Image (cartoon, rainbow, N blue to C red; front, side):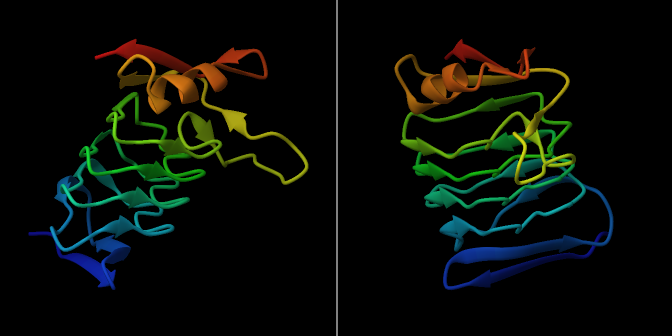
Length: 157
């Protein structure tokens, strides 16, 4: 059985570690924020975020093998680069509770990012599910095209 380690400091999940690929990760209920780079380069299939988490910080899942994520309607903020580099993430449902999604949070890769250039989009679009008129729809519309590539697609739930 895989050894899984969660490091939680003052309600913020600061580090997730596992010694092998984990199919489904259930974040502990005591977590209120997913910290910067908490899942950086982690080999996980699905992450279930508990109700009570309010923020997903910048780079939280950067370059993670994430394929699927469940975001509860307690989350209000998804920061810059939160899901960048998650090349296996094909779709994501953003609850109506999310009122702020930072730049380049979904649909971009940091692989070729340089401060003087724009970020590089994935080679295929990420489908973002959400309510019409929500922050999810706004983010999708603002990030529909990058370098003449279709990078996000919005579908109403």
